[in-house]
Image (cartoon, rainbow, N blue to C red; front, side, top):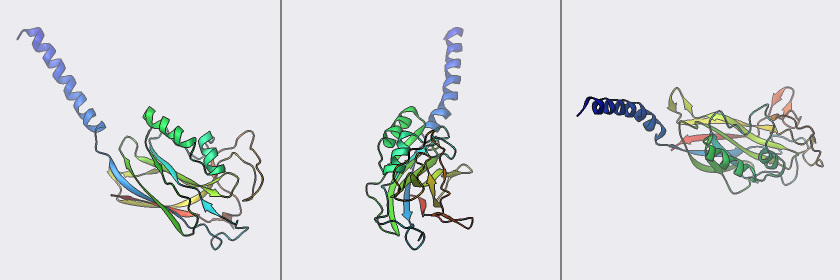
Length: 222
């Protein structure tokens, strides 16, 4: 082997040694979780003007990194978030999520098919998550309502370099900032310019400075 050949081989070996760990990291086996999205919102827990035919829409969520945060507080709602929180529709939020998956900002779409019409009631789904997209955001419309959703946003399932075995959080009522109406069955009142996604300050959900959650969400490693 000539000196030039040996030099090229050495460079190639060094390059492969550097790339190897990165490839191993990117090829890390995803972890599977089950999520239980539970509605507790009812006439007993939130008696003020509680509406007839109250329900949560089917649930939609996503695993993601810090670049893609569909329900981030202080952000302007996308068209998909608007349609979810105003109408309970997964479209076009599901398309927005698939686009984020294609760009590498999101890892997996999470969906359930049926509305939560009883309280307590629970929707369950399984999903895979990896260290590139260690956070989960998940939501359902509080229906009927102007633009209100039950949301758990930017939930990290990886702590101190390890996947958590189980995590439970309360579901708060959020306002998407796209409709200015203030009661469950009010006529549409499109917000222009759009407001920001924020915790819902309605007296339906806040009394005497105390917030009353609308449910819980639990993630369990499988």
